[in-house]
Every structure is written in C-alpha cells, then in structure tokens.
Length: 301
Image (cartoon, one colour):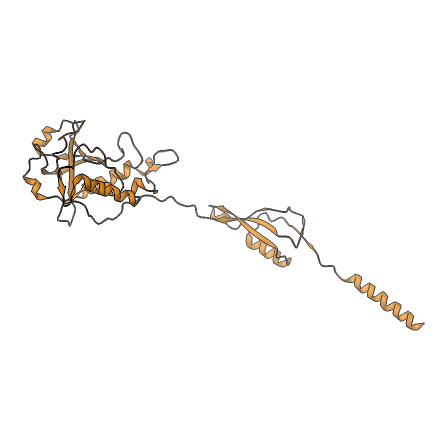
C-alpha cells in the first residue's frame, strides 16, 4: 500500500514539474521600427534570437538618411510573426547620384596636314591657293573669325563684319541662334586662335574667294607655341568631334598635302571622331547645354 502511495506522489510531481516548463515561443512580436537604423534592428533581433529576416534597400541621395528604416514589407507593427518565416524590411541606402559625363577636349598628337611653303608663290586672290599671315581681331564662333587682313584682301571681303568662314566645316551656332555643341566648338576654336604664335589664311582655287554673305573662305593654319610647323585648324576642330564636314563646293579637292587632298584630310578627321564617338558623335554631354530645358545653360557660359 505504501509503495502505491509513493508511486502516486512521483506521478503527481512529474505532472507538476512538467507544467512548470516554458513552452518555446513560435512567434515574435513585431515592434515599431520607425526612426531605427539597420544596425539597431539587427541588435533587436539578436536579443530576440531571431535570425529569419532580410533587408531590401531603397536608394537615397541624402547621406543623412543612410541606413534608416522605411517599412515592413510583409508584416505590420504588433503582429505575432512566425519565427520560421522570413521577415522582409526596407532600409534606405545612400547612393551617390550618378553624375552626367561631359565632353572634354582630348589632348591629341597632331597627325594632319602641314602648311607647304610652295603655296606661298601662288596668288591668294587669283587664281587662289596662296596664303598670307594675319592677326586675330575677334573669334566669332567655332567656324568664323575676324582678322586683320592685307589691304587687298580686306577690300575683297564684302561682309560688314569682314569675317572669314572656315572651309569644309560647320560647327553648331553659339552666337545669335544658340545650339547644342555650339559653345564647346567656339571655345576650342577661339582658344587655339588666341593661343597661336602665328596665323595664316589660305584661299582655295576650287571654291570662290568669298561666300554667300561676302565672307572670306579660307583654310586656317596656326603655329602653336614651341611648334615649327603650321597645323590646319579646320582639321583639328573636326577631329575633336566639334564640327562636321560640310559645304563641299570644290574646296580642298585640287590642293593636297602628302597622299591626300585637303578635303580627304577633313574626312579622315571626321571618320576618326565618329569611330571614337567624340564630341557630338558620342554619348558625352555638352557641359554648356541644359538637357532638361533643351536650351543653353547660361549659368555656365
């Protein structure tokens, strides 16, 4: 009888002790993470011994918001969330805004035609093809400038501005009607003319002396500092991708340097710019153009 009583007591104790054991929690209560950062949320879950969570990120360009909680993707505040499930949380991540890539003039080793002194013996007015030295008065834009000419040339120019239009090339406008790529072309041309030690203009026997507006038509040769030879400015502007070969009315087809006519040299320059996606032929942007408003960005002019 005593043995039976002891057995009953043991059974009762086992039952009582079993009732004192804590049943493992299968859920976790989701708190309000507003104002918390990613690291604070991680610390919270470490204390709660919960590992089945993951972050997804939303980009922001505000560095002060980096790592800040945004929202719960698949739960609400106060939910009893099953620990076996994966809780997804959105966090802000600072991402430096991608800056547009703007065109910059390339430092190119000159490989174009040079001024041949044999042209000096040819009359630059008739039959044309000769050359004469000038000084710069005003650089108008990427393909036009005003020079101090010999008197006979000055008298032959009928335009009021007494300007010269560069042969076989055309840059976008940067004066009255302003166009994309006009300012970079103007800056490049004007920089070369203003920095030249000497400037020589050569007329062309294959085209008229003056154009539609009475401007002189010429090839522009520049002697840069520390250079002995004169280099062709027309070629240089086109090769940078800042001008197109245009107005081919015979100019450059009968005069040559080396194996190529002047006109062929110009196309060599343009082909290079196109193949290498330079200037207006490439994806880089004109720094002086407002692409959202499609107009000049005058704050940069």
